[in-house]
Image 1 (cartoon, rainbow, N blue to C red):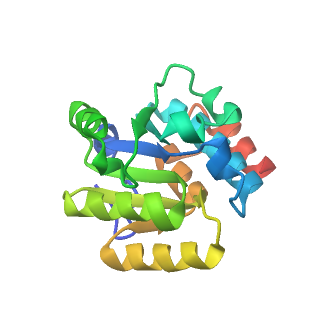
Image 2 (tube, rainbow, N blue to C red; image 1 turned 180 degrees about the vertical axis):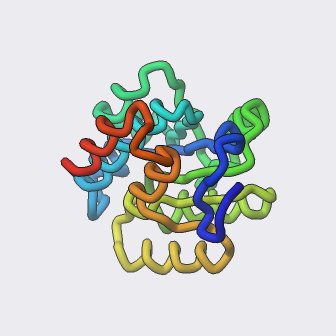
Image 3 (cartoon, rainbow, N blue to C red; image 1 turned 120 degrees about the vertical axis):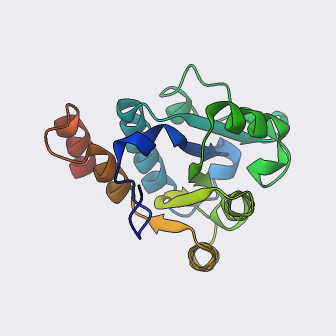
Length: 191
């Protein structure tokens, strides 16, 4: 069950939540305004979702031209084969649809780049498909922060949940008794 802010409240809904890491490729990342903070946040997120056993789907925009997922991220997810796409929305990829259906996901958490293009268009398409959408605003990046702010505000009006990484993580930890609480909370404090 989700509260009015879109935060997961019931453990039985966890399997239907999946994180979609969009296009964190060196050539795209090089122009992102908050690149270092974004990579730090993504590092924490990936470590946390492993602890929560949440599925992660990774995409790459035309990797033969733009390169592959940046090493500092790909090292954290060595067993994941990114989905190659040429559409700006992840929903333009047949392989993405297959992955989504196989995992039976009903709630997507979007992270990556670029906020005003691929994140925005993917979130709109997810809403059109009847999926719940959360965007971790400190886990997305854009070349222009004004564009990102406008896109996130529009997505929130459309029904997306826009929350910080910490809110997402602590919703899954639920209590300080979680077996990984100390490790995850230390990552957050050190950020």
